Amino acid sequence: MGQSHPFNIATGTEVLPQEPGPPPRTPTHVSVWVHVIHRCNFVPHVRFNGEAAVGGNMAVALYRVGRHNHLTRLFTETGAAEDSFTEGEGYRAGTYRLAVRFLGDENLLPSSKSASVVFHLARC
Image (cartoon, rainbow, N blue to C red; front, side, top):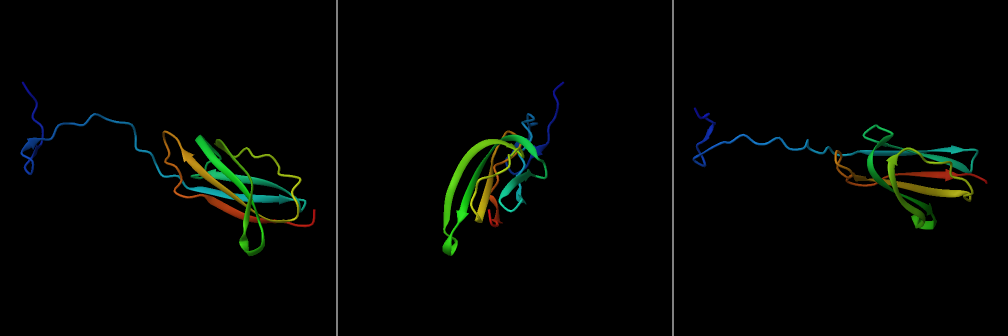
């Protein structure tokens, strides 16, 4: 015997069961901070939804902040989304901005915007 399904009165058709699909991707929140060491060296840290490492990639950019908040990009790179930064050294005294954006993977949506932190290196 056939199996009866719920009936949609508005469309006049049976409501057929849906095949299960992949789980929905969840939004990603990125947080970033910098630990300054010995006035002129620093170590960046990043978390994705509170985790130090997730699948997918991230884009990272470091800027020097100049007069009138003018930003000069020092480097940009794309890499695995994990908190595996090495110590930044050899930078001049001044103010810097580190920006990180998660680019997404099969489980997490790309972050809606970059997370950034401004930090200052003292006399080097």
